[in-house]
Image (cartoon, rainbow, N blue to C red; front, side):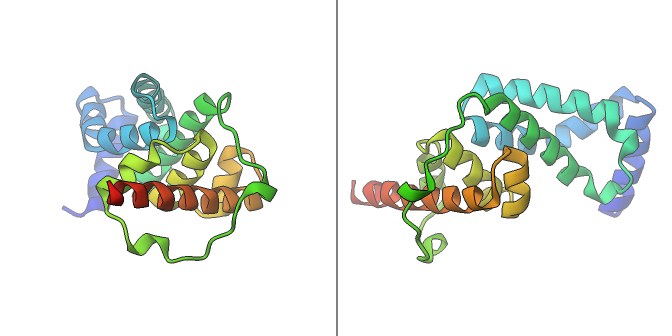
Length: 175
């Protein structure tokens, strides 16, 4: 069975409030949603709350989903918004004039484990931008809208995050 057909069938069952279908959808997507929330928040309890809140919204609004092939992207957007909403109080962005612009090919010289370690040490604002852009694949415009900042702030925070990550990974490599 094709993924789209599975989504159509699964979504149809979830719309009918079929508990087995809801559980199946949860099981298929919970790691993806939790991972996104945890990367943005860097807090297990908050990430679990976002996970729960995301599924409440998904199950309440899934009938509005007009393109089943966009199911996971839609769910990730809900989770990202909820995680960002929870972290708004502590999100701080570095002033543009204090950020060094880097054009190095940063992505070519690190591995996932090193990056994961370094990401959690980033300031909240830079981490949120980095996760949304580099990990989740959001364009700067959408990232900026989600975070309630300008597109240039998104770009500068991304550059700032990469610079901090480069320094931290270099330090890890030397250890």
